Structure formats: C-alpha cells, structure tokens
Amino acid sequence: MGTLKGKTLFITGASRGIGKAIALRAARDGANITIAAKTAETHPKLEGTIYSAAEEIEKAGGKALPLIVDVRSEENIVDAVKKTVEKFGGIDILVNNASAISLTGTIQTPMKRYDLMHGVNTRGTFACSQACLPHLLKAENPHILNLSPPLNMEAKWFGPHVAYTMAKFGMSMCVLGMAEEFNGKVGVNALWPRTTIATAAVQNLLGGDALIQVSRKPDIMADAAHLILTRPARECSGNFFVDEDILRAGGVADFEKYSMVPGANLAPDFFL
Image (cartoon, rainbow, N blue to C red; front, side, top):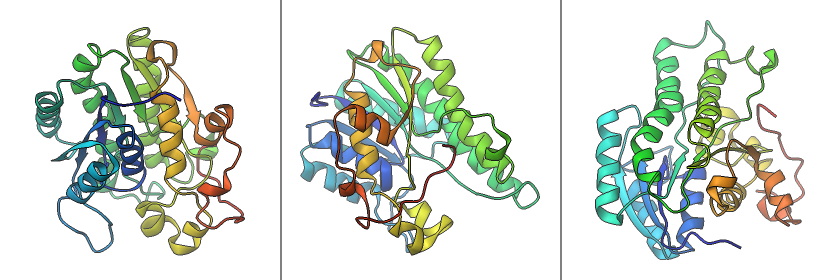
C-alpha cells in the first residue's frame, strides 16, 4: 500500500463530503492538506467549515491549511496556491472536487445557475490546474484528480439536464486534454462513483433522506482516490476511474462497509 506521507494536497471543496473524506484519508498517512473552500461560518443546511475540517485533519495525523477560496475567483486561487507553497514548500497533488449542481432542463435553468455550474465546475477546475501546474511539474509524483464522470456522448445524459452535464463534462475534458498535454510529467485522471454518495448535495438537492439511505459513504471515494494518488503519476494518466472498479482491482472485496444502510439496494449515480 502506497503512502501520502509528507505529500502536499490542494483540495477544493474540502470542508465537507467527498473532498473532506479524501483529505482525512491522506491525513492518516501524515499528509499536508490545503482546504480550499468557501464555508468559513456554520451553515444551517451544510455541515462543517474549513476550520472544523482543519481540526479533523490535524487529529487524523495531517497538517492543515484552511483557506477561504471561491474557485470562480482567479485571485483567490492564485493567493491560496502561493500560501500553500509558502507553508508546505510545494504542491504534489491537486484534487478538483468543488462542484455545483442543478438537475434542471433548459427552460428551468436560470442563467445565474448556469454560470455558477460552469464557473465552479469547468472554469474552476481549469483555473486551479493552471495555478498548481508550475508547482506540480517540480514534484516527485504529481497528480491532478478531477471528480468528474467518464465522457459519454449519449443523448440520455444531456437531455434531462444539459447545463449540468456540460459543466461536469468540462471537468472531464480537462482530464482528456491535460493528460495528453502533460503526458509523462503529471498524472491527470478522473474519479466517479458507481452509486450515489451520501453528501450534502444528495441530501439537500437530489433526494433527501430516502436517497441517503441507498447511498454509499464518501469513504469509498476517499479510498479509491488514495489508490490513484499513490500510483506512479507518469504511468497513470488519462483514466476515467470508477470507485468500485478501481477498489475491486486493488483487492477490496467487502463493499458493504461503505453502505449507509448495509444490504440496501443502492442507487446508481449519473453518467454510468
């Protein structure tokens, strides 16, 4: 089993959910983590802040740098990258986890929401990658991991929510393009869940408690990400990984431990 001990991870949206789970898994190895997220104060519907996440990371064995970052702001990103390098000496891994969602049709999607999804998902991913790459290119085993789906140009994935699909596939196209551009220099990959994951988005926007009950814990994505990020970066790039598949290939046989309710008939995620 590889380790992330001493590695520096810049994780967007790491104050909760999948981003925080990836951070905590790395922290258990003794990694340094920049929590680049917007939530600095407690929110009635959103659990956790960058500061509470930092406390958990430190307790888990890692070192944390909580920074208020809106990935739609180039200035925020550049400043956060600078502070990360000043504190930890470099950046080894970028995890583009921050995302916005609205499963609405064309007429029902306000342009403000369209702009949010494209600003956070596609533009934010590109901007964070652009800012981190000069430092990643100096790292021993540099990775970029985007939480985005395999590119699948079937109409059924576009019809119900074309704006959201475009924004998520924009993240995936960053994988496709950057993996080729930085081939042999930086590992650039995507990771997506086989099932729905118990996150605030699932709870508040998609299906409430009913969907949470048939979802998996964010830990499955964290364990899958760990497997990717500990691989030799220059030999592992341009892949669209699915959490269950990579874990199964890595020898994991027990997936019940990841279920919110053991034995539940799990809900499949989009795009697969």
